[in-house]
Image (tube, rainbow, N blue to C red):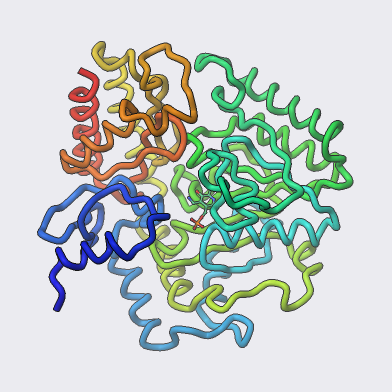
Length: 446
Ligand code: PMP
């Protein structure tokens, strides 16, 4: 058979240039918090496949459940018949969704597709067209999801026209307001809510506005938790005007933040919840959760998709939900989170490093360190040239971490490195990763 080197060359030549890639080589194995490359190189994985393998790679109970489903029924097309894992998954999710009013489910394959479905549902249920999203937000690469993505132009550059009827306000993150990093949260919240009021009086009338979509913890755009007062403010505006609130928990959901859903910290009720990633620990599965009263307005046949709610993916997700209960995953996230924050805050206090660190933030095991502009501490951050700058501190640190045995990612905007290890990571592996990170940061800034 073809050698690994030849396969790699084949990939270089025949796989689309449209795909970015963080590491070289071929990944051949994943076990718990580690991944292995062809040739035997092993890395501690703090990416979890971008927040997906939350129970670690190849969790035995999840893989077993998927394997059994593979031998029973792989594909029961959702428009042909219900299948058992689909219904068992609904049964598992009903008690954990962030509000008891969320009682109607639709499963799809990817986060982007679920965002598309959420937008469609909001438009049909309200009879209105416009969608308000956040500057800095990320919701996916398909045409509708891309239209509400405002974290970087690269996703939409050169491919307009995209979905119309989209308006945006700044996420309460200082970059989005052009304010200094030390700006008080209350200022950012009031500025963002003021922009929303302006938008609803100057650009999109409430009676034309179907929904506001937001990540309760900004993901690709920089790992910024939304202040609870902001989410409450959005809820109030939605209630006042009959606008639906779409909460995108694709990255922050399923215990990632130490609660099942990030939105629980604010107590805010979503009208539509979007889920994916950690839901099935690596099997493609996403979902839109809403109220029956809203989804009853959809005509049968308007939602669907050949692979939507695949039986193997659903069986894996049922196993994930069970492991969450059996292995006290929420407890582990909370304990490891404290240790991770302690380690990162200690690093930040190091006098050689502190001038380069702007912030250590996040919730649970969705944590980030933001570094200064590549042009040095205090320099204005240029979102266009800095992200691609060879001087980018975050990119150089990531490279160094990988050399030192830790697989880790930046976010897709700003000088931010994110920590998204498996939610069941051991104390020992968490410490090992934090130590490699600290050592790598020190060697890059020195
Ligand atoms: N929403 C959020 C918040 C995400 O982080 C992502 C993926 N990073 C998506 C939507 C899109 O999901 P997918 O890549 O599965 O289409």
